[in-house]
Image (tube, rainbow, N blue to C red; front, side, top):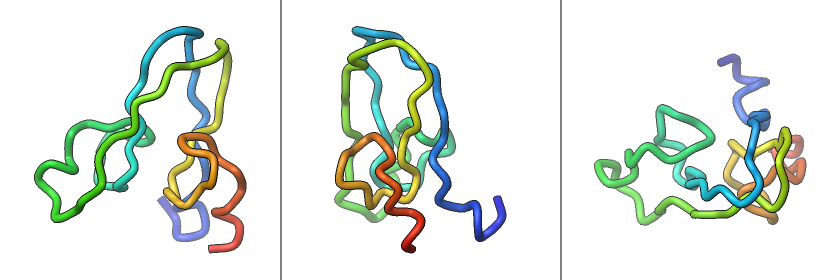
Length: 79
């Protein structure tokens, strides 16, 4: 991933009512979802579980600085 695109949100298809685990530590190899890598990393971050409110393509944050986790709020543009 190039430096300029490093923090771009990832569009994913979510299913209404389904639960997901968003990675909040940046160590997951399955971004933007948690794969448990935070357990082996030296971090106090944990995954954030959330339920999709509606089905469709949603853009999940990868910079981990969003004020609306797990969804991208554009913060990556100022990093």
